[in-house]
Image (cartoon, rainbow, N blue to C red; front, top):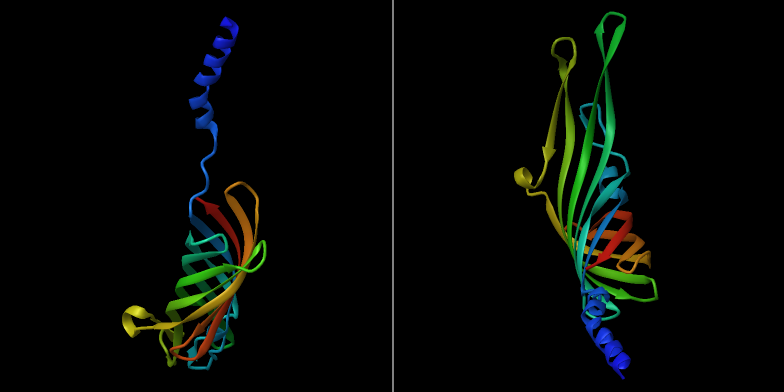
Length: 217
């Protein structure tokens, strides 16, 4: 009898300790980071001329973060920020003396800052569809080449059009798909594709393809 009471007391005393080691359930909030590639069709549509350079490469990089709130087992709301950068190296050759030539090298860039509010819906076990609203700001650079020589070389002036000096901002919609798998109890590794369409200028701006890492808080 005494042995039985001692055993019960020991088991009862271990209760709080056992409760401490039990993992708490995940919350409704999640954090995500993403980084990958972008195809910016608007940036690549610009052309270069002898007096002005503004074309950048179609392919660039894109990355950002997202905070999500789980509404139900199959739906969620998320706020997302993505920054994309497209660049191109430029080369301007000129004759600095009879029979000799020199070259000026510089780089132009086109940057998008995409702020998104999206609704996400699971359509399969590891696949979800997302769509929402977009607010986009742009910073695009161009180089003007003057037809005069300054110190035996062309005069090149690089300028940038952005939200601060030219109100380079647009509104639109986004939509895409994301496939992800659990790699831990709270971590998911995935791949997300998303398209960005600007309603204010009726233009398909860009397409991003980014690996994702999501942590469930």
